[in-house]
Image (cartoon, rainbow, N blue to C red; front, side, top):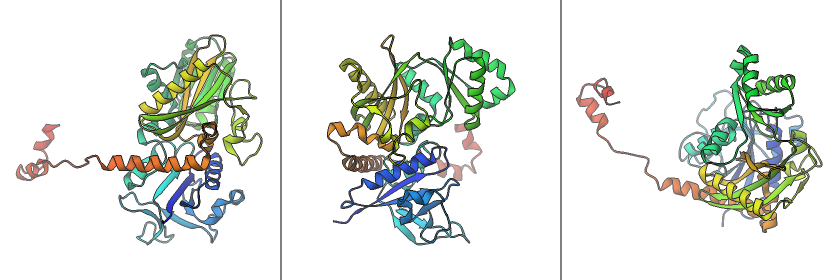
Length: 397
């Protein structure tokens, strides 16, 4: 039985570039090599694609050399049936060349923009290559915190009160923006770039001056800024979902520990081992919450999974007001750090088995896509020819 060519894509033009590298290499270490010919596909900070065995060594990225002889620059043609990666000529970019690496399935290990936001998912949809991630629409919603909150609210899910502004609004009249935000109520507020994860650019504001500073920071990362009303001494609980479409298995819940107000980038990724990603974060599994709260959170996780037509593994982050017991949906991570494998281990699912499930769901999605009709025979063009052009047809719009 031949092995499946499994591409693991990561990196890209994002502030979460390094986190993506850790997640990808961690996954590659846990792949069943009896089943898969797994190989890394690295996208550099400037957007160039590379393949090569040296990309499996995390030390190689400390002083990345794009001209290393062991690397091959490649590209993925956005054409159904392309079947894999082609060599990219330096003299004649995109000149037709032979396929250098077949792809039977892709695991997307991106975090942040240009990878987790629907862009890469769209490319693989065009190529008709099965991929592990949530689809284009769900990925886009999951990356945009403003739209995400609007979707959650429309579902009747509890979300924290929030306001948002554009960077251009802020630059034009910052005092007006501050006045509007303060209509939320008493401080503290949490200020976030709309399209960024891993807690990058997020700050807590306790007064008008710190709010101004927090917005300045967030605006340096994104053109839109979200400001949420904070909770005094919140309890963060995370839950992952695994499956495809309406079929979702909720993981056990976890509580990140050792933090006061919110998890910073360093809290998430640099405590303990720097090579273990989210696995190295201090946490309690299962979370020390009641069975009732656990079930409520797991049900909301699967509800969100279904609404966004998720695929593979996602993680939903929740906040609990310890004074009232009220649960709030914070956000969805459509490609969670370390693929949240540690949340499924208590259910008897190893990381290696989780990867098998990701491949299984990716293939299921492509199979279902191919069962849909994408062509419709009409007489529109014939009528355009007989009618003497397209001007008369414009009235049909």
